[in-house]
Length: 189
Image (tube, rainbow, N blue to C red):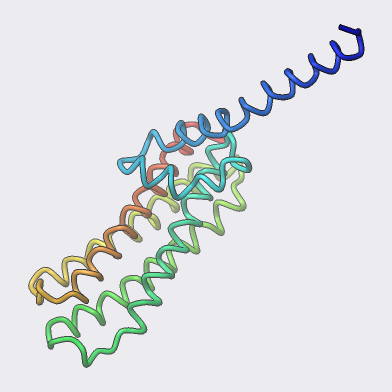
């Protein structure tokens, strides 16, 4: 075999091994980030697109978690706003109205959190972590309170079951973002 073919073959094999380890590294970063959450499978599924950017950065994973929670919260809120109140019974209408308000409050807290995560400073880190924990916990509590409102409503209604399912998933997304924030607080900047 000529030396130029041998060198080309070596470079080709090296390029294969380095590119094949790249998805594993990204997957490893993602698995590590999601290991702190209660909903690891959902975390991995929803945060996978951020792997190449977030890598091994707890602050970037926290931002990604909040970004995904915002997107999910918006989708749920949008679907609740499209629902006609006349399609619900009296208790369900009250629960729907309360849930809309709670999800809007949750969205506001998620947006405040993302704004702070984008401007983290070492000199204010502890105070910022405290504010973030409060806002993300409140976002989570708002969704839980929304679900509580539907406890004594028409459980047989397909619309109510769909609302419960969507809000529960959104609550899981907020839980993931809070877990990623806690990892950031523990690891530091």
